[in-house]
Image (cartoon, rainbow, N blue to C red; front, side):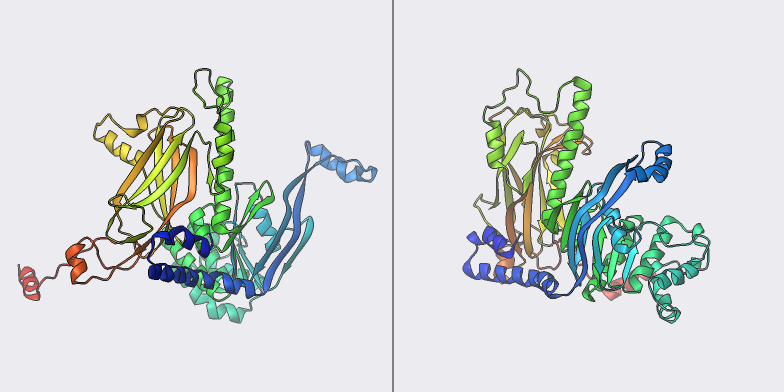
Length: 506
């Protein structure tokens, strides 16, 4: 979402001075990311790139094709793993590549890395490419870790003297110093990926390709990897990043590409592409459940039953009301989301420490039960701050033995209701996006869900942390002065040195 659009969405209730500061803050935050990328030189260009494989039904057909091709007969079927990919990447950009398994992500990266030849199109690369495509790629299992470091670096075009200068840093980053002279075949998967990643990032290539490799490492190693990737980007290294972790793609990448069955179906800002990806996953899940239900009952998902009170204008409502930033089956719809103060007045500016409310109004189109109305709050960097819903509250009520829970209510077509989420705002200074959803929780596991309606960018609000003064402390005792993402409500206690000596003596 552009800075102008975001400012328009939130500054209606702000004082003029606050709105001016707010817009300036958004512009300052966004400019460094996008402006250099437009001016930087192109380091990677793909034009109509495709990869086709020949699929043989029987082993003997392969032999027939080898000897009978001169007759013009084909004993194979064409399978396009990748088709019509056009991409231009500039120096210092980070591009995320997302899609379901088998969508062509790894094939694309292998073509860019030069380990796989494209069937059609052209690939132009300016500079050295380092690729971490799969676990243990480029490693000889019989060689030691030390020997594999020099082997990998040599493949990347580095001399022995250059590797000698960086070897200590590579071993330190991989954190396997006591095993560096052991054969790689004795390494665990985590040790292997740490060493492989350390080699690729320490040699500082012009283009770095990472394909799901970081998922193998532990949390501490992943943190160090992301820090190193940020450092490389600041030095102008271009990053191509494949991951199923949407939050990593959102926060690490400027742009993203969505592949589906080998074809690019979305290309743009990472947040927009990830929304398209979630829509695609929802449609795939919907088709899966439709097939499962049809196989068991002979009826397809969503088919109206004779006694169901379906409204006659359901289709019209669906076509009219669904925005680009929403998706779902639309058996119910999130029609309005408002951010309010403690008294119910609409606001878009909150002081950290104050009470606030988020109200979600839902219109029901088909009979529903097992409903969870949920919120997700993200900051402007795309980091998920909190996810919570009525089902979270219901699970706690069930654990206490209560019977009256929201999840068991039945809603009929034409019903409308509003859920109000009340909380004390403990967030740090930033712009926040509210996502709202109506979800059918099929059981009590929180793992089996059907998205009825999901809305991104349902509302926005700005939070500011106020410096304490005599008036603020007296009138708003809940407000704390802090830095960071959220207020942990910390308190400090001080013990006198004499008391500590007395305790030590005891």
